[in-house]
Image (cartoon, rainbow, N blue to C red; front, side, top):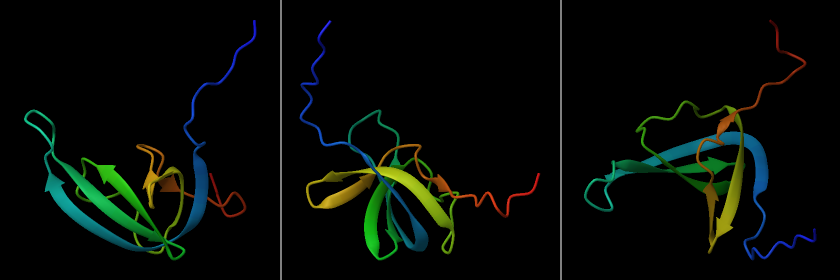
Length: 95
C-alpha cells in the first residue's frame, strides 16, 4: 500500500535551553463554556516562545534548563501542550 503524506504542516521542532524569563498574561476566555487560560511568554536562550496553559503558575522557574516541542506559527514560536519539561542531566542524576 502506497501512503503519501498530504499534510502541508511544517514539522515540529525541539528546543532546549536555560529559562531566562516568564511573563504571564490572563486569564483569557474565548467563548462561553471554555475554561480560562493564561498565555505565558517564555524567554529561553534569548528566543521568545508562547505557551498556553490553564495554570497561572508553571512548574518551571527562571534558571531551569527546559526542553520542549514547538511550532513556528506566523512570526511566533508556540510551545505544544504538555511538552514543556525540565531537562535532567543523566550524569548528575542519583536514584
